[in-house]
Length: 110
Image (cartoon, rainbow, N blue to C red; front, side, top):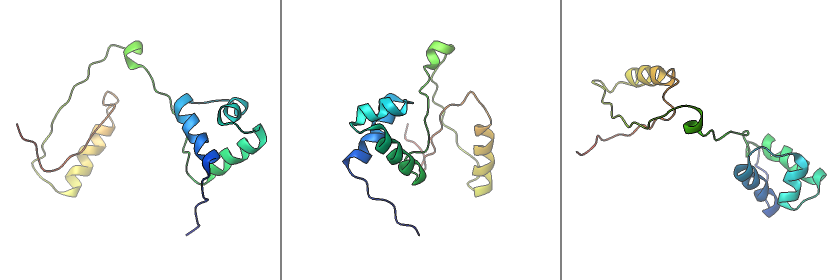
């Protein structure tokens, strides 16, 4: 297994800035993390290649795009076989209206 590069404080500022500000130009990112542009680009490339940064994601304000409602639903399956869990999860993932799913075990207390 390949050894992961050690992260120094400057390395840690890069993912922190991306998480806080989203997609930035390389020049703006360098300014925020207090590095010159070329070393900042090199560090960013190294962090991406090592898997520390997996991408840029948008935090969409769904309430501004469409009318939304947050609904929490508890579902119990009759069978606890792995194939049943996989089939259920596959079906739920195919429904675009579900934007978040949480699996728990042990039941709930009402």
